[in-house]
Length: 90
Image 1: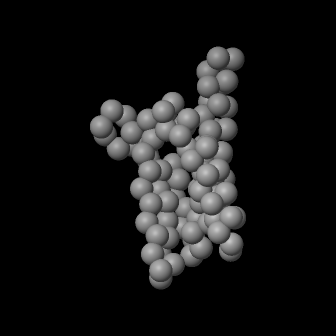
Image 2: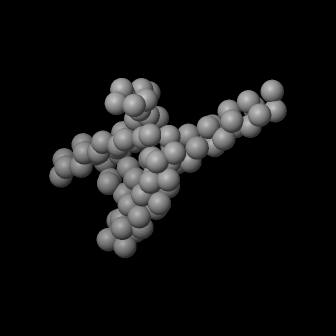
Image 3: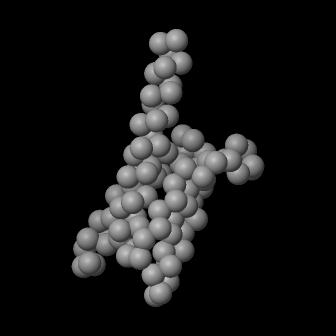
């Protein structure tokens, strides 16, 4: 994994995460170390109370971890939009 690919993955993650963070009151926790114990968690909060975990990306490679988290955030956003559309139509 080259540095440019790594930087792109991180940049893309935050491009997707930041707007969702504001809209749905999300918080993320991540951990990366030299032993490959890498993970990113994203939690939904209601006020100051932690709700459900919406992302759990765990990969040995840091960039792969960000890519997995990106996929899960996109899925979360699509599910939220689908639920919103069902409420409007129902």
